[in-house]
Image 1 (tube, rainbow, N blue to C red):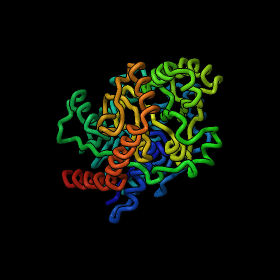
Image 2: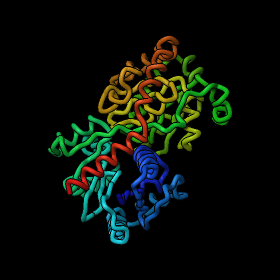
Image 3: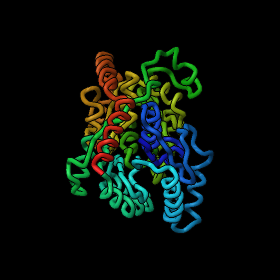
Length: 379
Protein backbone atom coordinates (compact mmCIF):
# COMPACT_ATOMS: atom_id res chain seq x y z
CA UNK A 1 0.00 0.00 0.00
CA UNK A 2 1.45 3.38 -1.05
CA UNK A 3 0.27 6.22 1.18
CA UNK A 4 0.66 9.95 0.54
CA UNK A 5 0.71 12.03 3.74
CA UNK A 6 0.79 15.82 3.93
CA UNK A 7 3.67 16.61 6.32
CA UNK A 8 3.92 20.39 5.92
CA UNK A 9 3.01 20.81 9.62
CA UNK A 10 6.43 19.30 10.45
CA UNK A 11 8.18 22.33 8.97
CA UNK A 12 7.09 24.52 11.93
CA UNK A 13 7.75 23.98 15.65
CA UNK A 14 5.52 21.06 16.57
CA UNK A 15 2.27 21.88 18.33
CA UNK A 16 -0.73 19.53 18.52
CA UNK A 17 -1.29 18.83 14.81
CA UNK A 18 2.43 18.66 14.17
CA UNK A 19 2.83 16.11 16.96
CA UNK A 20 -0.03 14.05 15.54
CA UNK A 21 1.48 14.07 12.06
CA UNK A 22 4.97 13.31 13.35
CA UNK A 23 3.96 10.39 15.56
CA UNK A 24 1.50 8.96 13.04
CA UNK A 25 4.12 9.06 10.27
CA UNK A 26 6.66 7.25 12.45
CA UNK A 27 4.05 4.68 13.42
CA UNK A 28 3.10 4.08 9.78
CA UNK A 29 6.74 3.70 8.76
CA UNK A 30 7.18 0.99 11.39
CA UNK A 31 4.42 -1.16 9.86
CA UNK A 32 5.22 -3.69 7.16
CA UNK A 33 3.54 -3.67 3.78
CA UNK A 34 3.20 0.11 3.67
CA UNK A 35 5.21 2.68 1.71
CA UNK A 36 4.87 6.21 3.05
CA UNK A 37 5.54 9.30 0.93
CA UNK A 38 5.56 12.61 2.77
CA UNK A 39 4.72 15.94 1.13
CA UNK A 40 6.66 18.95 2.45
CA UNK A 41 5.13 21.76 0.42
CA UNK A 42 7.84 22.09 -2.20
CA UNK A 43 8.67 18.43 -2.63
CA UNK A 44 8.35 14.86 -1.39
CA UNK A 45 10.45 12.66 0.88
CA UNK A 46 10.34 9.36 2.74
CA UNK A 47 12.02 10.96 5.76
CA UNK A 48 10.02 12.06 8.81
CA UNK A 49 11.59 15.38 9.76
CA UNK A 50 12.00 16.03 13.47
CA UNK A 51 13.45 19.54 13.24
CA UNK A 52 11.49 22.59 12.02
CA UNK A 53 12.84 24.87 9.30
CA UNK A 54 14.95 27.56 11.04
CA UNK A 55 13.09 30.87 11.47
CA UNK A 56 10.01 29.46 9.71
CA UNK A 57 7.63 31.29 12.07
CA UNK A 58 9.24 34.67 11.40
CA UNK A 59 9.32 34.00 7.67
CA UNK A 60 5.61 33.13 7.61
CA UNK A 61 4.74 36.27 9.55
CA UNK A 62 6.70 38.46 7.16
CA UNK A 63 5.09 36.86 4.09
CA UNK A 64 1.58 37.35 5.50
CA UNK A 65 2.35 40.98 6.30
CA UNK A 66 3.76 42.02 2.92
CA UNK A 67 2.15 39.73 0.33
CA UNK A 68 -1.61 40.09 -0.33
CA UNK A 69 -3.52 36.80 -0.51
CA UNK A 70 -0.39 34.97 0.62
CA UNK A 71 -2.27 31.88 1.76
CA UNK A 72 -4.14 31.46 -1.53
CA UNK A 73 -0.95 31.90 -3.54
CA UNK A 74 0.93 29.39 -1.40
CA UNK A 75 -1.97 26.96 -1.60
CA UNK A 76 -1.97 27.17 -5.40
CA UNK A 77 1.79 26.55 -5.61
CA UNK A 78 1.63 23.65 -3.16
CA UNK A 79 -1.26 22.08 -5.05
CA UNK A 80 0.87 22.03 -8.22
CA UNK A 81 3.81 20.38 -6.44
CA UNK A 82 1.47 17.94 -4.71
CA UNK A 83 -0.20 16.89 -7.97
CA UNK A 84 3.15 16.45 -9.70
CA UNK A 85 4.40 14.16 -6.92
CA UNK A 86 1.19 12.14 -6.84
CA UNK A 87 1.49 11.43 -10.55
CA UNK A 88 5.08 10.29 -10.10
CA UNK A 89 4.48 8.14 -6.99
CA UNK A 90 1.08 6.64 -7.97
CA UNK A 91 -0.21 6.67 -4.39
CA UNK A 92 -3.01 4.27 -3.49
CA UNK A 93 -4.48 6.66 -0.92
CA UNK A 94 -3.94 10.21 0.32
CA UNK A 95 -4.26 11.10 4.01
CA UNK A 96 -4.62 14.75 4.94
CA UNK A 97 -3.81 15.02 8.68
CA UNK A 98 -4.38 18.77 8.88
CA UNK A 99 -7.99 19.54 7.87
CA UNK A 100 -7.49 21.00 4.38
CA UNK A 101 -7.14 18.34 1.69
CA UNK A 102 -5.48 19.05 -1.64
CA UNK A 103 -7.32 18.05 -4.79
CA UNK A 104 -6.71 14.34 -5.37
CA UNK A 105 -8.34 11.98 -7.85
CA UNK A 106 -8.37 8.89 -5.65
CA UNK A 107 -9.21 7.50 -2.20
CA UNK A 108 -8.97 10.22 0.44
CA UNK A 109 -8.89 10.19 4.26
CA UNK A 110 -8.79 13.41 6.28
CA UNK A 111 -8.32 14.01 9.98
CA UNK A 112 -10.48 16.67 11.62
CA UNK A 113 -9.08 17.69 14.99
CA UNK A 114 -11.81 20.13 16.01
CA UNK A 115 -14.24 22.76 14.71
CA UNK A 116 -12.88 25.62 16.80
CA UNK A 117 -12.82 28.09 13.88
CA UNK A 118 -16.59 27.61 13.63
CA UNK A 119 -17.46 27.38 17.33
CA UNK A 120 -15.03 30.11 18.43
CA UNK A 121 -14.01 32.11 15.33
CA UNK A 122 -12.97 35.08 17.46
CA UNK A 123 -10.13 32.99 18.94
CA UNK A 124 -8.45 32.57 15.53
CA UNK A 125 -6.75 34.99 13.14
CA UNK A 126 -9.20 36.21 10.52
CA UNK A 127 -7.13 34.87 7.60
CA UNK A 128 -7.15 31.38 9.12
CA UNK A 129 -10.94 31.43 9.47
CA UNK A 130 -11.27 32.52 5.82
CA UNK A 131 -8.96 29.72 4.65
CA UNK A 132 -10.79 27.09 6.69
CA UNK A 133 -14.16 28.25 5.39
CA UNK A 134 -12.86 28.15 1.81
CA UNK A 135 -10.95 24.87 1.69
CA UNK A 136 -12.29 22.62 4.43
CA UNK A 137 -15.74 21.47 3.30
CA UNK A 138 -14.81 20.36 -0.26
CA UNK A 139 -12.29 17.91 1.20
CA UNK A 140 -14.75 16.82 3.87
CA UNK A 141 -17.32 15.90 1.22
CA UNK A 142 -14.76 14.04 -0.96
CA UNK A 143 -13.26 11.94 1.85
CA UNK A 144 -14.03 8.23 1.89
CA UNK A 145 -13.77 8.28 5.68
CA UNK A 146 -13.07 11.04 8.19
CA UNK A 147 -10.86 10.52 11.24
CA UNK A 148 -11.38 12.45 14.46
CA UNK A 149 -9.34 12.53 17.66
CA UNK A 150 -12.37 11.93 19.89
CA UNK A 151 -16.04 11.04 20.02
CA UNK A 152 -16.68 14.70 20.80
CA UNK A 153 -15.38 15.84 17.40
CA UNK A 154 -17.40 13.12 15.70
CA UNK A 155 -20.54 14.59 17.26
CA UNK A 156 -19.43 18.07 16.18
CA UNK A 157 -19.13 16.98 12.52
CA UNK A 158 -22.54 15.35 12.63
CA UNK A 159 -24.08 18.44 14.22
CA UNK A 160 -22.45 21.19 12.13
CA UNK A 161 -21.97 19.54 8.72
CA UNK A 162 -24.56 16.77 8.85
CA UNK A 163 -21.95 14.08 8.22
CA UNK A 164 -23.36 10.58 8.69
CA UNK A 165 -22.00 8.66 11.66
CA UNK A 166 -20.75 5.77 9.53
CA UNK A 167 -18.40 8.13 7.62
CA UNK A 168 -16.57 9.16 10.81
CA UNK A 169 -14.03 7.04 12.69
CA UNK A 170 -12.72 8.37 16.03
CA UNK A 171 -9.14 7.22 16.68
CA UNK A 172 -7.63 8.34 19.97
CA UNK A 173 -4.15 9.83 19.94
CA UNK A 174 -1.17 8.42 21.82
CA UNK A 175 1.56 9.48 24.19
CA UNK A 176 5.29 9.27 23.48
CA UNK A 177 7.39 6.88 25.58
CA UNK A 178 9.58 9.77 26.78
CA UNK A 179 6.69 10.97 28.98
CA UNK A 180 6.94 8.90 32.16
CA UNK A 181 7.38 9.56 35.91
CA UNK A 182 10.76 11.05 36.87
CA UNK A 183 12.49 11.56 40.18
CA UNK A 184 13.81 14.91 41.40
CA UNK A 185 17.28 13.66 40.52
CA UNK A 186 16.16 12.87 36.96
CA UNK A 187 14.77 16.36 36.38
CA UNK A 188 17.43 18.31 38.29
CA UNK A 189 19.61 19.44 35.39
CA UNK A 190 16.72 20.67 33.22
CA UNK A 191 14.82 22.32 36.07
CA UNK A 192 17.96 24.09 37.30
CA UNK A 193 18.25 25.79 33.91
CA UNK A 194 14.82 27.32 34.47
CA UNK A 195 15.25 27.99 38.20
CA UNK A 196 12.54 25.48 39.11
CA UNK A 197 12.29 22.87 41.86
CA UNK A 198 10.75 19.42 41.38
CA UNK A 199 7.16 19.33 42.63
CA UNK A 200 7.19 23.02 43.50
CA UNK A 201 5.55 24.67 40.51
CA UNK A 202 2.27 24.69 38.60
CA UNK A 203 2.41 24.10 34.85
CA UNK A 204 0.38 25.34 31.88
CA UNK A 205 1.28 24.04 28.40
CA UNK A 206 -0.01 25.28 25.05
CA UNK A 207 0.33 27.93 22.38
CA UNK A 208 -0.47 31.32 23.86
CA UNK A 209 -3.77 32.06 22.11
CA UNK A 210 -7.31 32.88 23.29
CA UNK A 211 -8.79 29.37 23.09
CA UNK A 212 -6.36 28.07 25.71
CA UNK A 213 -8.06 30.42 28.20
CA UNK A 214 -4.91 31.39 30.08
CA UNK A 215 -6.56 34.63 31.19
CA UNK A 216 -8.78 32.60 33.51
CA UNK A 217 -5.78 30.59 34.70
CA UNK A 218 -3.97 33.81 35.57
CA UNK A 219 -6.96 35.30 37.37
CA UNK A 220 -7.37 32.08 39.34
CA UNK A 221 -3.68 32.11 40.17
CA UNK A 222 -3.96 35.68 41.46
CA UNK A 223 -6.71 34.52 43.85
CA UNK A 224 -4.21 32.26 45.61
CA UNK A 225 -2.63 33.59 48.83
CA UNK A 226 0.63 35.50 48.17
CA UNK A 227 2.66 32.98 50.17
CA UNK A 228 1.33 30.16 47.98
CA UNK A 229 2.26 32.02 44.80
CA UNK A 230 5.78 32.57 46.09
CA UNK A 231 6.19 28.86 46.90
CA UNK A 232 4.53 27.61 43.70
CA UNK A 233 5.22 29.75 40.62
CA UNK A 234 3.08 29.24 37.51
CA UNK A 235 5.18 28.08 34.56
CA UNK A 236 3.93 28.83 31.03
CA UNK A 237 5.31 26.62 28.25
CA UNK A 238 4.43 27.23 24.60
CA UNK A 239 4.93 29.45 21.59
CA UNK A 240 3.42 32.90 21.31
CA UNK A 241 0.36 32.56 19.11
CA UNK A 242 -2.13 35.24 18.12
CA UNK A 243 -4.16 37.94 19.86
CA UNK A 244 -1.88 37.81 22.89
CA UNK A 245 -1.38 41.52 23.67
CA UNK A 246 -3.90 41.54 26.53
CA UNK A 247 -2.42 38.34 27.94
CA UNK A 248 1.13 39.69 27.74
CA UNK A 249 0.02 42.85 29.55
CA UNK A 250 -1.56 40.70 32.27
CA UNK A 251 1.53 38.50 32.63
CA UNK A 252 4.16 41.24 32.76
CA UNK A 253 3.87 42.29 36.45
CA UNK A 254 3.66 38.65 37.55
CA UNK A 255 6.86 37.86 35.66
CA UNK A 256 8.56 40.81 37.35
CA UNK A 257 7.46 39.47 40.73
CA UNK A 258 8.85 36.02 39.91
CA UNK A 259 5.45 34.38 40.25
CA UNK A 260 5.08 33.62 36.53
CA UNK A 261 7.83 31.89 34.56
CA UNK A 262 7.30 32.14 30.81
CA UNK A 263 9.82 29.78 29.24
CA UNK A 264 8.41 29.52 25.72
CA UNK A 265 8.59 26.57 23.35
CA UNK A 266 10.62 23.59 24.58
CA UNK A 267 12.11 20.62 22.71
CA UNK A 268 10.21 17.42 23.46
CA UNK A 269 12.84 15.87 25.74
CA UNK A 270 13.03 19.03 27.82
CA UNK A 271 9.23 19.37 27.88
CA UNK A 272 8.97 15.83 29.25
CA UNK A 273 11.28 16.74 32.13
CA UNK A 274 9.44 19.97 32.92
CA UNK A 275 6.11 18.14 32.77
CA UNK A 276 7.28 15.33 35.05
CA UNK A 277 8.57 17.82 37.62
CA UNK A 278 5.31 19.76 37.96
CA UNK A 279 2.97 19.47 40.92
CA UNK A 280 -0.04 19.70 38.60
CA UNK A 281 -0.93 20.68 35.04
CA UNK A 282 -3.53 23.44 34.65
CA UNK A 283 -5.46 23.18 31.38
CA UNK A 284 -8.57 25.41 31.35
CA UNK A 285 -9.05 25.40 27.56
CA UNK A 286 -12.53 26.34 26.40
CA UNK A 287 -12.48 23.93 23.44
CA UNK A 288 -10.28 20.95 22.51
CA UNK A 289 -10.57 18.13 20.02
CA UNK A 290 -8.32 16.00 22.20
CA UNK A 291 -5.71 17.68 24.42
CA UNK A 292 -2.23 16.16 24.27
CA UNK A 293 -0.70 18.10 27.21
CA UNK A 294 -3.12 16.57 29.76
CA UNK A 295 -2.39 13.08 28.45
CA UNK A 296 1.37 13.70 28.57
CA UNK A 297 1.09 14.94 32.15
CA UNK A 298 -0.97 11.87 33.08
CA UNK A 299 1.73 9.61 31.62
CA UNK A 300 4.24 11.38 33.88
CA UNK A 301 2.06 10.70 36.90
CA UNK A 302 1.23 14.41 37.18
CA UNK A 303 -2.46 15.00 38.05
CA UNK A 304 -4.39 17.42 35.86
CA UNK A 305 -6.83 20.24 36.50
CA UNK A 306 -8.74 20.60 33.23
CA UNK A 307 -11.94 21.97 31.74
CA UNK A 308 -15.08 19.86 31.97
CA UNK A 309 -15.99 20.72 28.35
CA UNK A 310 -15.45 19.36 24.80
CA UNK A 311 -13.17 16.31 24.55
CA UNK A 312 -11.19 16.77 27.76
CA UNK A 313 -13.37 14.48 29.93
CA UNK A 314 -12.73 11.71 27.36
CA UNK A 315 -8.99 12.07 27.93
CA UNK A 316 -8.76 12.85 31.64
CA UNK A 317 -11.66 10.73 32.85
CA UNK A 318 -11.67 10.42 36.64
CA UNK A 319 -7.88 10.87 36.92
CA UNK A 320 -7.95 14.64 37.48
CA UNK A 321 -10.10 17.53 38.63
CA UNK A 322 -12.54 18.91 36.04
CA UNK A 323 -13.77 22.49 36.39
CA UNK A 324 -15.90 25.07 34.59
CA UNK A 325 -13.37 26.90 32.35
CA UNK A 326 -15.02 30.27 33.05
CA UNK A 327 -14.99 29.94 36.85
CA UNK A 328 -11.68 31.28 38.16
CA UNK A 329 -12.75 30.79 41.79
CA UNK A 330 -13.41 27.08 41.17
CA UNK A 331 -10.04 26.80 39.46
CA UNK A 332 -8.30 28.55 42.34
CA UNK A 333 -9.93 26.18 44.83
CA UNK A 334 -8.91 23.18 42.73
CA UNK A 335 -5.30 24.41 42.69
CA UNK A 336 -5.29 24.86 46.47
CA UNK A 337 -6.79 21.39 46.91
CA UNK A 338 -4.13 19.87 44.67
CA UNK A 339 -1.36 21.66 46.60
CA UNK A 340 -2.62 20.81 50.09
CA UNK A 341 -3.97 17.26 49.71
CA UNK A 342 -1.05 14.87 49.24
CA UNK A 343 -3.31 11.82 49.45
CA UNK A 344 -5.59 13.05 46.67
CA UNK A 345 -2.65 13.96 44.50
CA UNK A 346 -1.07 10.53 44.99
CA UNK A 347 -4.31 8.71 44.16
CA UNK A 348 -4.91 10.80 41.04
CA UNK A 349 -1.32 10.17 39.98
CA UNK A 350 -1.82 6.40 40.13
CA UNK A 351 -5.10 6.46 38.22
CA UNK A 352 -3.63 8.85 35.64
CA UNK A 353 -0.71 6.51 34.99
CA UNK A 354 -3.04 3.58 34.52
CA UNK A 355 -5.37 5.45 32.16
CA UNK A 356 -2.56 6.96 30.07
CA UNK A 357 -1.26 3.47 29.23
CA UNK A 358 -4.39 2.94 27.11
CA UNK A 359 -3.29 5.68 24.67
CA UNK A 360 -0.49 4.61 22.31
CA UNK A 361 0.71 5.88 18.95
CA UNK A 362 1.18 2.30 17.75
CA UNK A 363 -2.53 1.65 18.30
CA UNK A 364 -3.36 4.93 16.54
CA UNK A 365 -1.23 3.96 13.51
CA UNK A 366 -2.68 0.45 13.24
CA UNK A 367 -6.26 1.68 13.47
CA UNK A 368 -5.47 4.33 10.84
CA UNK A 369 -4.15 1.68 8.44
CA UNK A 370 -7.36 -0.29 8.95
CA UNK A 371 -9.23 2.82 7.78
CA UNK A 372 -6.96 3.11 4.72
CA UNK A 373 -7.78 -0.48 3.75
CA UNK A 374 -11.50 0.10 4.24
CA UNK A 375 -11.45 3.25 2.06
CA UNK A 376 -9.37 1.63 -0.69
CA UNK A 377 -11.67 -1.38 -0.72
CA UNK A 378 -14.74 0.85 -0.85
CA UNK A 379 -13.39 2.88 -3.73
